[in-house]
Image 1 (cartoon, helix red, strand yellow):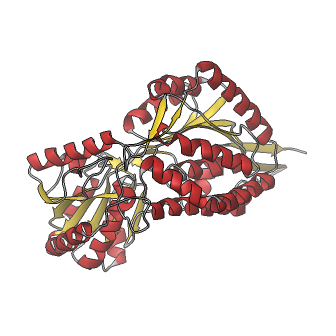
Image 2 (tube, one colour; image 1 turned 60 degrees about the horizontal axis):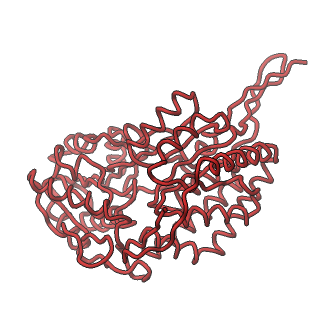
Image 3 (cartoon, helix red, strand yellow; image 1 turned 30 degrees about the vertical axis):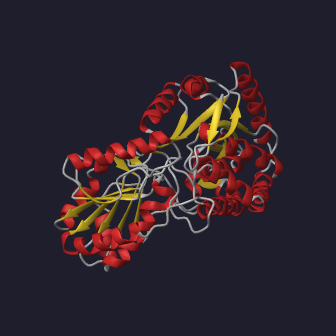
Length: 458
């Protein structure tokens, strides 16, 4: 049985019987049929359904947020924000989708020619648990407006959220089976995913998750010559230059690192700070971290909740201990909290750098690593010293200087004097081992379309 467990208390929430091969096959066939019919629906009508979805997301905000809080421990205010961001994204594609997907005329002599963006078909989505609603919506909404169907393999610990989202799409007027949540046992996921990628009824695949899962899905898609989009996490650099306001940067750094209890791909993880302001920044940052309110994620004042699973807590503990053994200094936190649930203290390490787990690996929890840079050149070196390349931010009194530095660091997004975040109006995705392809904006809705050329002679 698939069990969902409240990570704040360790108590079981629900049990779900995994689907066997026959039920998966039935679901795929129904989804494929629904997608074929949906592709024939005019784009204006598809966009109108997205507008209805935005309304329903807001109507069901409280119940959806409480489900997210229960299944993965997200503080309730952040869970509500996740629902609202999904609604805003639905409204964005309801407004902009038809225009983005409109035929693009091309001037040629003696004929009419244009480029069209047409549906691919059924898209398999393998999604993670850390944003149970937003991760699904930022892919599914543009894909549906583009005329595709969705096979959703969500993380097993948020199975309730997956099934609730499936029902929400139907309630919003999307055809039944167009969005199908597959209930698959964890041990069967690699085999089922590989089989679905090879299935001729599945046109493309997208995955947000680990490098191991991404490598498996990406290679399977390559063998099948199918489009894939991979978002594989990150270890974003938060660069503080010597002219930055240390207190202002530190306050932003606390938000950047400990949102979602540190369980976000675009959380800042490596804090690369100029030597001249390192002491002031570190003091203000540690003070801010110590002031974070840890507690029941159902309470509105809570800023840091539990980690979603106990193995995640164990991974953070290992990263702390191995980094300290390698020479890092523990400034605050560093231990699990006693009692039931998957709690870990907000933690800051100083004197980190390449060769330490807290600097080299993706730290998916409340752990921040500070590294001191001698000058801008050294800051670029440290920011680039990562296998990941999702986002980065630079903090400085001179935005032109910050932009010039950011251009020298490889990432999918660069923010100057702002915390990295996704926005439906801008493309989102990574470089290096953070993956490839883009979600959101025009790029995201076109990722899963066939860019088709038409040439009509008289």
